[in-house]
Image 1 (cartoon, rainbow, N blue to C red):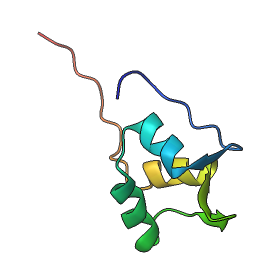
Image 2: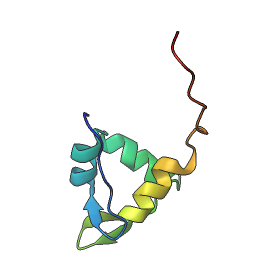
Image 3: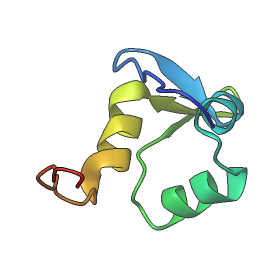
Image 4: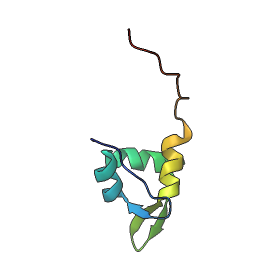
Length: 72
C-alpha cells in the first residue's frame, strides 16, 4: 500500500474494493466480521460495507496520537 487513501463515509464497498484499496487480505475482513468488529450487510449474494463502518473499524482501536519530537 502506498499513499493515503480516502474512505468516503457514504460510499459502499465490497471485499474486493477494500482489499485492493487498503492492501488487506480477505481473511482480515472475514475475521473482523465474524467477531463483530466490522459492520456489514449482505445484498444480492454480496458482502457490502458502508464507508463509515469501515472508518469506524479502522479507528476504533487506534493508538492515541503521540507528540512529535524534534530530531537532533
